[in-house]
Amino acid sequence: MKDIEIARKANIKKINEIAENLGIKEEYLESYGKYKAKISNKILEEIGNNKNGKLILMTSINPTPLGEGKTTMAIGLADGLRKIGKKSILALREPSLGPVFGIKGGATGGGYSQIVPMDEINLHFTGDIHAITSANNLLAAMIDNHIFFGNQLNIKKVVWKRCVDLNDRALRKIEINLNEEKNMIPREDGFDISVASEIMAIFCLAKDLNDLKERISNIIIGYNDKEEPVRAKDLKAEGAMTALLKDAFNPNLVQTLENTPAIVHGGPFANIAHGCNSVVATNMAMKLADYVVTEAGFGADLGAEKFFDIKCRKSNINPDGVVCVATIKALKYHGGATKEELEKENIEALKNGIPNLLKHIDNIKNKYNIPVIVGINKYLQDTNMEIETLRHELEKVGVELSLIESWGKGGNGAKDLAEKVIKLCENNNELKYVYNLEDDIKTKIEKLTTKIYGASGVEYSDEALKGIEKIEKLGYKNLPICIAKTQYSLSDDPKKLVIKDPFKITVRDVVLRSGAGFVVVLAGKIFTMPGLPKVPAAENIGVDEKGEIFGIF
Image 1 (cartoon, rainbow, N blue to C red):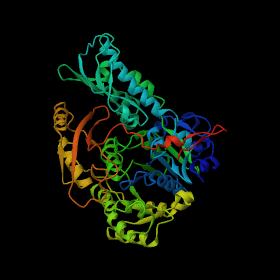
Image 2: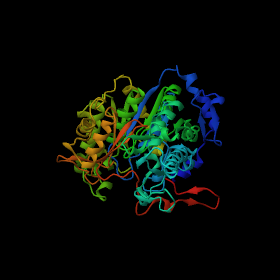
Image 3: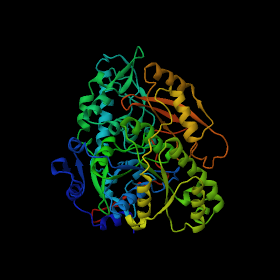
Image 4: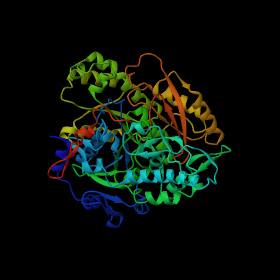
């Protein structure tokens, strides 16, 4: 049975009942139909003194192109915790339309481990990403409008891009202002995907509406003829942009197929952005339940690193435990197995791929000082020999293994993981960071790439070196960094799956995100506007004669 069919047959409850079970009063709830609602951030004034629940991060090894089921496992764990009598809640990211219509599919889980209504969440949901897109593009329009009417700020170079929440490679580089109107000076421009925009980052890192507005006001949109930064507040844009985001800034409440509450809010990609759901949603979840399961995008080298070094650092969050998800198939993939060999027992390829998992484990356990367990998203073709081989290798580094079958069994398929996670969270370890904020930008990049990726060093383009020098001269040396690179490899080469030889990371550019409060470092050939695959998922999505959507997975 397909995911969307399973979701439609589920016995889901009305959202006000889910809220009531969490202790959320009606005055803090704004329903969007029967099964979705927004929770007012004003609730934090009432529950702010509640004890924080335990926070568990779901991350993974470097994924294959179709992903390893991290969201499915996160949902399964939250359901599994409820199965063994714990009050649990999910804090997840919102899906972007890019992957939904691309290759990876939606981001609502799968099988019997889903959040619902899955089709609505995967498409327009409550309109948050549309609001982010509108706020971003309003600023772009105000920039060009200001220039048209005389350019009193003497803007010489515009660095602010427009955005759209779709994969569209044709928009990576464009020319605008070609209509030959007075003062309309043609220039090269481009689009980012909405989930990689600075507005999305600000949205997810802001602690309240005032902080949101302040961060927006500090966005650098370009530079004047004296090479001085021009900010959004110079255009008086922050008020209208905040107005567009006001309702979206309230987190969204939905549920799993087993009626476990899920707060789904914010959705930056981890390969080209910082990869974590909103701080307000995570803080809210921690005040509403005893165990909070959250996730960070792609592998631990990207999502988990940014979760620790950016989100946790900026919001004073200390996670209690980490689940690193893998599949036997993906480990063989990273061990050099061919497509045909992935479906068969292959101990040699498995052993060659296990070092990828061990590197992520070492980072989490020894670099960040957070206890970790490995969760294997179990497939029918996984053999006992393969599982025991992996278990033996994990025992050598003192890490437990849990087989997760939540895709086919829901929460019952994750009870073993739930029980082991509870024990894992008893350690009360204090989070450590890979670099210090006082380090200069190059030192931060080099610490991260050598310690987390295992690189032997870093090579910089001339453009990147000039950018770093400029950012530090502007006084932004002490910001954390957000590396944009391929998710498929620890290196910046998506084809380098089996890494045996030393490698270097190539930094081709750096971008200051002064409102978000970090520096984006572009490594390798990564783009902030993805493209569609040769056969996009969009070709199989439609609406049937009953008016119901099909084809989303």
